[in-house]
Length: 108
Image (cartoon, rainbow, N blue to C red; front, side, top):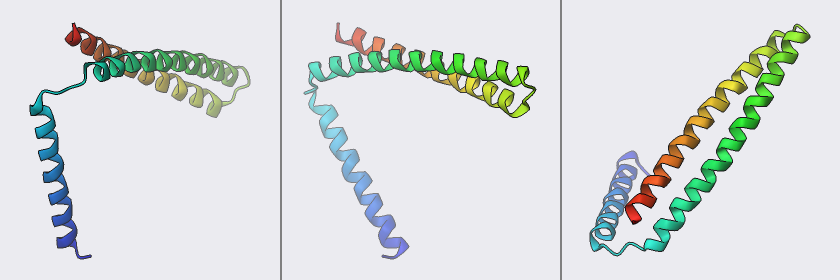
């Protein structure tokens, strides 16, 4: 398949997908239960992400302490990296909670 044919196929698929999305959105037939279930799922997933972030933070701090105790620079650096990743995960979970809460507010 040539590049031009591939580009045309992708372009047509995008147009068809956009049209389908537009028609679905304009129909106004959104399932309220689906939206509620999605919001609850997002909040539950956010709680799990928060718990994972806390565990990662504790593990990273422990790695950092052990690296300092045994004078292992790579372990200390890895511990700091894990702590930073846990902060990113924590931020992501907070954003997910906000989105889920907004969805629940829209349903009221």
